[in-house]
Amino acid sequence: MIRLGVLLSGSGTNLQAILDALEAGVLDASVELVVSSRPDAYGLKRAEAAGIPTLALTRKSYDDPVAADEHIARALKQAGVDYVVMAGYMRRVRAPLLAAFPQRIVNIHPALLPSFVGAHAIADAFAYGVKLTGVTVHLANEDYDKGPIIAQRAVVIEEGDTLETLEQKIHSIEHVLYPEVLQLLAQGRVSIGNDGRVAIR
Ligand code: GAR
Figure 1 (cartoon, helix red, strand yellow):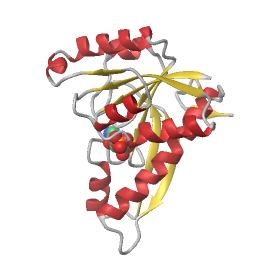
Figure 2 (figure 1 turned 60 degrees about the horizontal axis):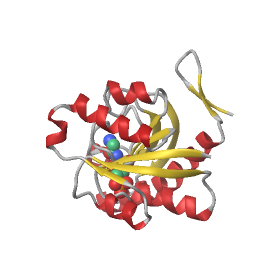
Figure 3 (figure 1 turned 60 degrees about the vertical axis):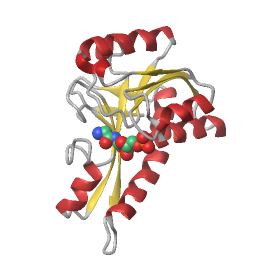
C-alpha cells in the first residue's frame, strides 16, 4: 500500500485510470493529493469528484519555479505522500521536489524515450514518420522527460493511422501501463542498480 500524490496540468485521463484501478482493487495505493500547475485543468475536477484534496498553482506561481516546487513538496509531505506521480504534468521538477522524494517521482511520456521528448511527443513522432512509437514510464530527474526507465510499451504506426488514431492508441496503452507500474512500486518490486538502470523482480 503506497500513498500517491499526482501532479498534472491537463485533462487528467491518466489520473482517472489510476482512480479506476484503485476502485477496481488492482492497485494497492491511495491518492492523497492532486496538484495542478494550472487552475483550469480538468484533472482537478476529476480529483474533486473522487473526494481527493487538490492544490492548484497558477502560471505566476512558477515565476520562481524553485519556490513553486518547495510549496508543492511541502504540501505532498503534509499529505503523507510516498510517491509522486507525474500524469501530464508539463513542468520540470526542480531540486526541492527531487530532494524531498529521491527516486520516488515517476513520469509517463507518450513516446519511446529517449526519442521525442517534450510536450508534443505523439505529434512529433507522427510527423517524423516513425513506424514504431510507444509509451515510457520513468523516474524523473531535473531534465524534462529523462531519468531511469521503468517500463516501455510499443505502439505500431500503421498505414491509415492518423494523428488522432495514434493518440487514441497511445492513451489507451498509457491507461493500462501506468497503473501496472504503480502496482509494481506498491509491491516493492522496482529497484535501481548502481549502474543507474532499473530492475524489476
Ligand atoms: C499524456 O499523454 C502524457 O503521457 C503526456 O501528457 C498527456 C496527459 O494526458 N505527458 C507528456 O507529454 C510529458 N512530457 P492526461 O492529462 O489526460 O493524463
